[in-house]
Image (cartoon, rainbow, N blue to C red; front, side):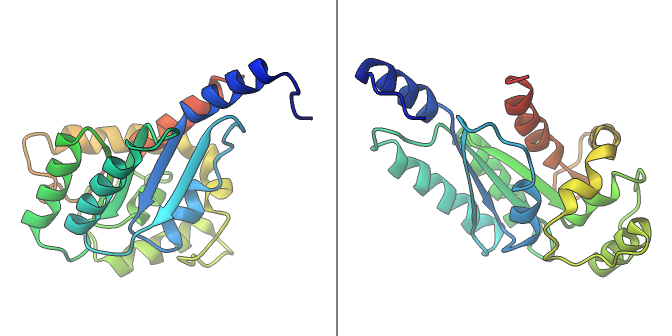
Length: 205
């Protein structure tokens, strides 16, 4: 039911737009499908887009979007850029992260691929793998269900092990301390975005 009093309506809209968050993913389906599974409270406007280019161009695109948004009355106030190391050059990967953080945006990277985050729900993976091996291992843990990159139910399948995955991601970062992000293989900061989205939900409980 919509509020009819003008003052209350303006207050509600103002509160709503102060919590407008943009998540830009390098993947067309894998990452967007996962993050769309989160139970986001209705007063948070979390927009999930895909930008299937290399990491450095993703960083530049995200910065341009936020600069454009600053000119709008109801702009995004927070932006997360989600991308993988994949086969991109080390310098491009590290520079993308540096540019994003320098411009006060947030990054959720995976080295080498997003499926590392999935695997961390089941084990503390400490050695580098070929990207295709990640998919095989995820399928093994899922049991009777074959992992597909376009799966729409990965959040629901993994949520019970999420705290374990967060701890494993933190351990990997500790183990790679002192290395550049490109050389910290395997590692991920996806858990930071996961924790942020969890915060939105827990604030309503």
